[in-house]
Length: 312
Image (cartoon, rainbow, N blue to C red; front, top):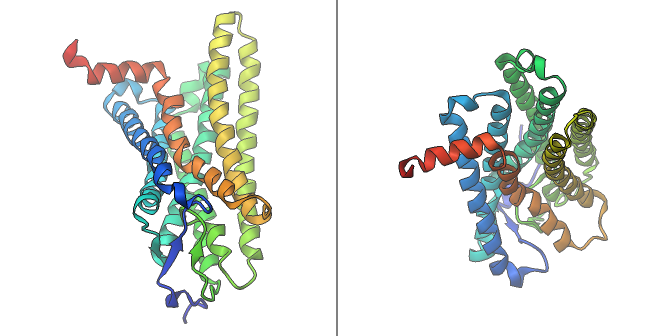
């Protein structure tokens, strides 16, 4: 039984890049390359330090390693193709490659959301229940959290493939974007995409729930922080929480903006939509290892000890 889709007549899609900014593609590519190099090197260093130092084999750093791995995957799934579009006009992408890129992007995005929830929970336990930290965050619990994260993400992402395969494209194959994602492909269809939109809204509601859980965790953390007797300790904790919440809010705001603009933001200029949609797959992977990794005292000290021990 063949799939009711005529995509076989169009072996490739055409990714436009950032609409209305085609003349600036060459220049836009340079900061994207710089951010990609920062993301690759930074996340790789943090992963290497965590893997080689036994003192960092703790729940906090396990979650950080998960986040860095996700960021490496997300940036690598998107930025090389973007640079090919910007610098070499390599706009063609096969239908299979487009679907694969979509799966990786949505998989890593959903995984990042769940890992951020886990990290917020870890921070809550560390600050609010420090005496029970070891008994709550055991290796078994961390493995269960990782397993649930992967299973939930697959349930969110795999149906998207089948929802797209059922749609007839009817000769439409130009995607006004720098990468393939669910609603961008769905909008090429010449049939109703209400089911795709509803499923996408369902995925967004799960991300919204993740954001709510993170918010509740940090409310409890802030309450505990303001109960600390030392102002110095309060300021240090507030500084850490502030940087974390800034990254989290940026991630969720850009993710929600991208999806909702696809569905309802028809009056928003395309170049603004696409440019902002690029930020959460380009900039955040480079920021996360700085906010969560390099600024962590233990990781900074171990990294300096590993890479500069010959000079000491």
